[in-house]
Image 1 (spheres, one colour):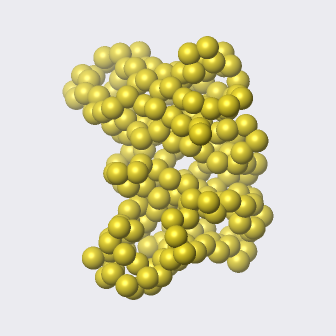
Image 2: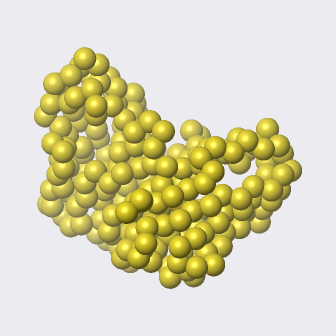
Length: 112
Length: 114
């Protein structure tokens, strides 16, 4: 079935470091891909999305490119801030299905 | 808009008791989703509604769980009887046009069953 695999956390970085969180997926057809972020004590918020191959989603300095050939949607940011500390979830929406399949989440800790 | 509203934010109950979680979606949204988040299983979709009608309840763990949406502005998730393994954070989310559009999540209800 459809699934999403994320790198294990926590990812610990210093402020202004480069961030990569890996995400790969298994799905039939062309799913839509998402990154959601969850801050402590809050619900999930959409960070960015891409709906077709080679699309790049971006928001708040974060980027991810839909790579069909490698079935990946890695999240990157050039310079992280302490305020980016949160849990990041990669997710897919199978074509024709009204549901999101989430990865297990990756916790990011950024220190000053 | 106030966003998705969930109540209560925290619930502590004893095994065997009935628990009712409540959700008010964003006005105008026609899809509503219930999720459960645990350390062991991550984030799981339990059930979703479209225009108040349940569309897919395949994620509901067992008959102890039930969900209703009597109108466009209110939904409940009920657990009867509750068990310690039901302890989790339960999220409600809503969206306007389906999953390919942004789902807006509520703050969640943290349920502890003793």
